[in-house]
Amino acid sequence: MKYRNTIVIFILALFIIATATFYFILAQNEYENLIEFAAEGLVGEIPELQIEVVLFAGSGIVYLGILGWILLKRLKNIFPYITLIIISLVLIITYAASRTVGVPIIGIEFYIGKYDMITKVLQGIIIAISGYLLYEIMKGSSRQEETIKK
Image (cartoon, rainbow, N blue to C red; front, side, top):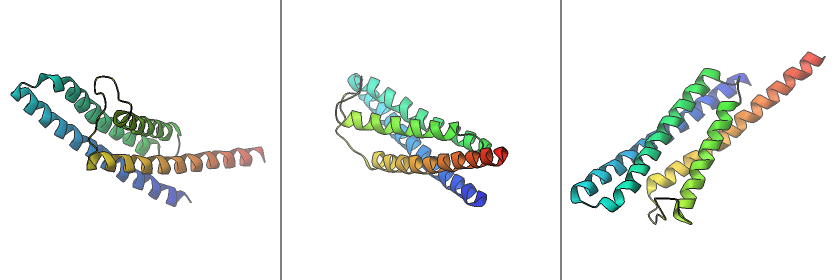
């Protein structure tokens, strides 16, 4: 059982690394657009692009930070998994809002890119795997409590 959960943690790690990588690619793409728009004098788009660069790069960094936390704690702490689920949900909801009702400064985006969809699918998988690991941690801690009571 413990061996299987270790494998699941490393699978989760691969999905986190993939998601962070795609966020860094998105940040790079937006940064290139920012430089291009600034060179052409299209200053109206610059604040939006700056926010997107920071959001995408920051998301990648946060995912890698949480990965470090998970690898350090493994199955001894539920908080990295809860944090990972919350961050992923917030990013999915923010993306959905930016395509439907709009978000401040950015407004409504009409473009749905392949990297956008890939990151959302990866985040859904991350949520599912994290939920499974949370379940395993909680199940393991309730077993320990039962053993202590006996």
